[in-house]
Image 1 (cartoon, rainbow over the protein chains, first blue to last red):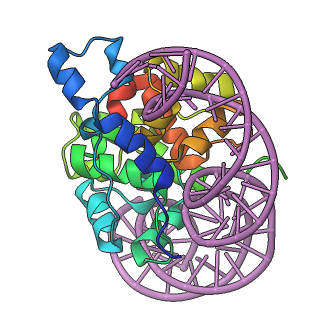
Image 2 (cartoon, rainbow over the protein chains, first blue to last red):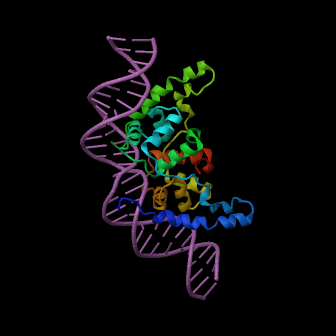
Image 3 (tube, rainbow over the protein chains, first blue to last red):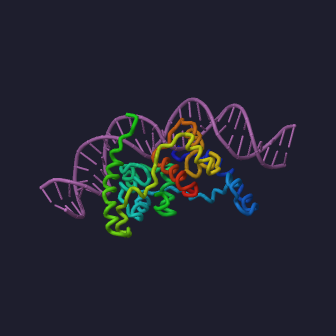
Amino acid sequence: MTEPKTTNRSDALRSAHVVAKDLHAAGAIDKATMRRFDVSCLTPVEDLRPEAIRAIRETAQMSQAIFAMALNVTTALVSKWERGEKKPGGPSLKLLALASRKGIDAIL
Amino acid sequence: MTEPKTTNRSDALRSAHVVAKDLHAAGAIDKATMRRFDVSCLTPVEDLRPEAIRAIRETAQMSQAIFAMALNVTTALVSKWERGEKKPGGPSLKLLALASRKGIDAIL
DNA sequence: AAAAAGTATGGTACTTTGTGCCATGGATCA
DNA sequence: TGATCCATGGCACAAAGTACCATACTTTTT
């Protein structure tokens, strides 16, 4: 079972997705209703190839050491990501996705 | 050795810190100089107590399930964080720090 | 009122990310 | 020629994070 099951994630995803219409009907999204919001608001997180990770870092014009500090990981790990020795996990992928989609400033 | 050594991190920290004066001397921080930047630009990441994590989530008015999706982790993990059964690691702490300091929108 | 769904906890077992440490080599600059 | 930044590499290891299941309380829905 190489591919992780998405039981927990899709549980939440499903429950959150169905309320999109509610938000639409309400007109505006007030604080109280904000407890439920559409998943489409979230920055999409996809798997990243080693080159893609390096591309994000080089676009930001950062060394591995500085980039690692921005993500709060070690430089050794960034090196391993870029060489495919290790693959970034859940929270790391989210950080990388933010940097990729919204720019490095989003995570500084 | 419960407390992690900070060898790698401080290596980078030291090297990055000394160039603060260079930036100051240059007047403005152009793209080329951006390879080196001061660490003070980074959102400070500190350890978070379980209650602090829950506070961040409740301020965002999110269920554990939705909050977990925003961080790209499982709901079970968020529950464990808030009960002190597990402690968020490097990348997770960064995400939580961003949410805490800049607001939940910063990581959506 | 009952059914259904959302919310949170609890535990167990397991994978592998991420860390620490140290050594190496190339590039750049005083 | 030192010194410093940069990136790679490997090895051992703790623990973060995952998957899965059961339970129970609360809210919403029909």
